Image (cartoon, rainbow, N blue to C red; front, side, top):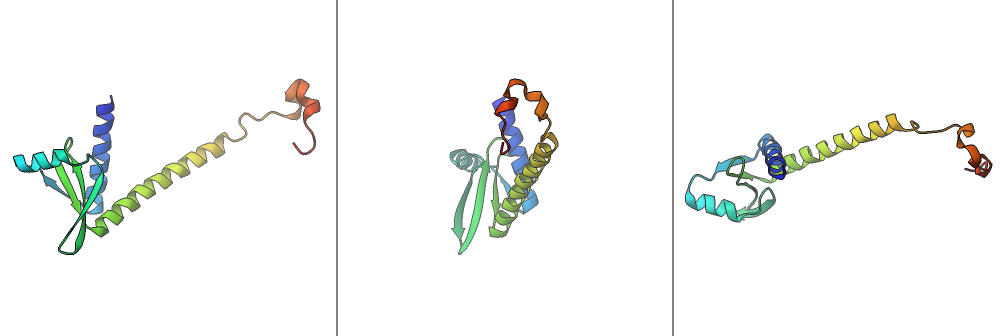
Length: 121
């Protein structure tokens, strides 16, 4: 089951990377495959080439490729990630708001604790 979850995560990440402007470069030679296998899986790393920073993310399982992007693509990707987190947080807050008060009891519903509730409680 963990493997299926990891593959699903790789699919979601891959789709977001492409949407952000990353280019999937297939590991189509034994040397590329070996290098891809040696890299951290689904974690960003970076390199500088010709004075420009490049971001890399290895996906040896789903696409068997190395995603490559520049600063702008990385920024777009992080904005997508932050947007998804913000949306999830907003959904959770709305759910909490809907559930707020669902378990509230009236003053007559606390039985023998009625006398323990003071004006500031």
